[in-house]
Image (cartoon, rainbow, N blue to C red):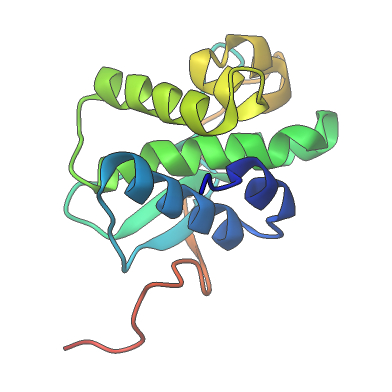
Length: 166
């Protein structure tokens, strides 16, 4: 039975819902999974020539997303929100599984997105190249680095997490 990842992504109501789609897809595609991750949101700055969508620090359990592209998407092209969030969460989740080479992860994200969602899906197009989407991800003519990158944790993000420490 083929899983309808497009339908599941369309029905997602939160970043946690999108992450559940990411985890299911990675487990099916790569046979790997990981629980106990947290999501942090931070102002990581803006640069119209390129941007940092998110990051995962090796040895941690926190994926951090840049709030600025998500904010910009809601102002310019809201239908990109889920595909973009899916793309960044997929990318950072693969990093959390121990894949550290940026080029390799980009190729993996594109392949996984294409196989699960199809070539025409916005998440696959973003994975192929963000250049056509940059005007919807960054504020034009303005560059800044955040003075304080305070990370706000998103409650209830990874539903496979435990609420206790053993």
